[in-house]
Image (cartoon, rainbow, N blue to C red; front, side):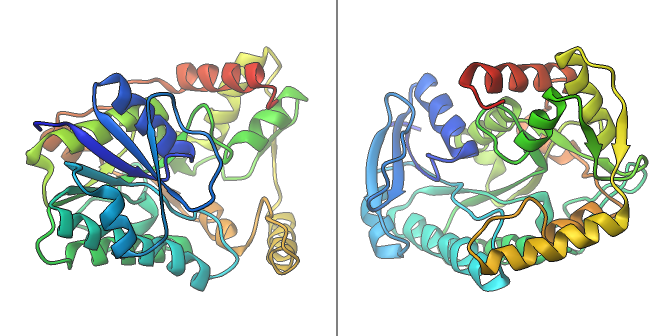
Length: 321
């Protein structure tokens, strides 16, 4: 890259913030593309450009950038239409804007677009996609939009479950752990691929910098799958509390999911809804990560204990727990 200029959607969110911060440190000219009227902060050294969710507006906002990292997305929503309006149409606008300006597009998708996997049969890039809920279907549709955009140079990254400072998704588990409560929502034999945010950011920068990733769809995660119990045990160790796991009974989760679906209609975002319930009842979400190693030279390095400790310390420093 000559100018090393990058535009990032979703730079006020969890993943986008860390990507923007890392790009500044790496010497990129970084532009945060935010919704009009958005007053959420961005990392120091980042230029804020306002845009709406249209190709025309995004094109003007990204003009002159070598790379557009599209990380803006809904992870939780009340229905499929809400997911599609942001995730699919947002990806469409980003793809058209990148094609029009000649920028390379790095789409932050999700393992949810691929579907379930286990340690013995991890989900791979060439497996037929099988998303289990509306979120996963919207991310898969987002990928299709990108691939079908004429004249676009693209890379699609499918990170697994991401954790780290600034994340709100795992935050309730840390808050409960500080009180000595270790609820484990998934089965003891249910494994997940996880990734610490700093490792994911390295993968994003590699994809942005190297043409070898063009036209590739890559799962991004730590090579060692872990269980929900492993995660809670690591949090317990940081909090120096005895780990006494409390498996959540399936009927209770079903009830909580029904209440969660109802709460969406009342304008309240629930911890659990039917979409989340399907994920928790899956046989596992494990993906193979060797393709990212072969194409990008990327391997996630942060052990779970170290990532959890860093995250928990940040939460505590910020007064989140």
